[in-house]
Length: 212
Picture 1: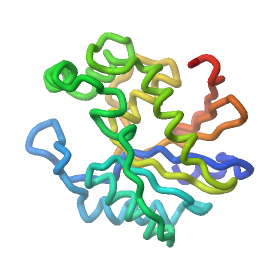
Picture 2: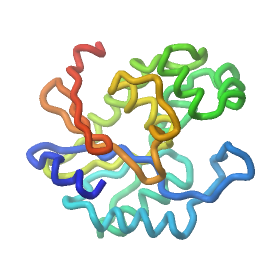
Picture 3: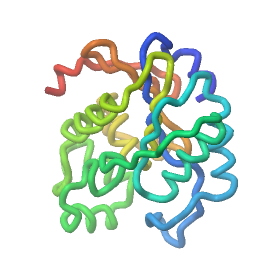
Picture 4: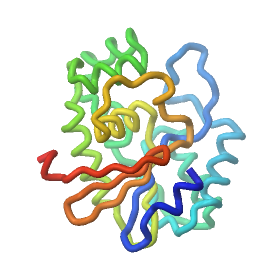
C-alpha cells in the first residue's frame, strides 16, 4: 500500500477504508468481536500511521475493540490526537446485515468467503443488497471528509471491505486471494459525483448516479 500513496490525489480530501490490523487467532474459523489485536498488530498499525504521507484529519471505527485499537495505533504513529468516532456502518449488524436471526445462521454455515460471494450475487436474505450497502457506506464516508490533502480513516472488518470493494469492481467470483488482509485497505476520493478508488494498485471509478 505504501507505493500506492503516490497515486492518491492531494487536491481533494481522501478516504482510507481499511481492515483492522493483525488480531489473535480464534479457536475456530470465526473471530468473535472479543478477539483483540496482537502486539505485532498494534505495531503494524503504528508503522502504517508513520508511513502515511499526509495528515489524518478524522478517525472513524467500528465499535469493536480491535478496530478502535487499530485507529488509536495509527493515530499514534501519525503523531495526531483525534477523537475516534464509532459508526454503525463499519460493523455488522449495521453495515449490510439488517436481520441477524436470518443472516447470522447462514453466515455461520457458509463462512465469510462463501457468504460474501453469495451476497455479491444478491442471494442472501436478511441483508441490504450490495448496492444499498455501498450507498450507505459512501454516504457515511462522504460525511467524514475533511480538508484537501488529508485522510479520513475508517477502520472496519474484512466482510464489509470485501463486499464494498468487489461490488464497486462488479466482481462476484471472489476467491481466497481476493480476501482483504489484516491492515489492508482501499483509498477513495470524490470528484463531483464520481467516486474513484485505488485497491491493490488498480484504480476504478463509478458515477454515483448509477447507484441512485
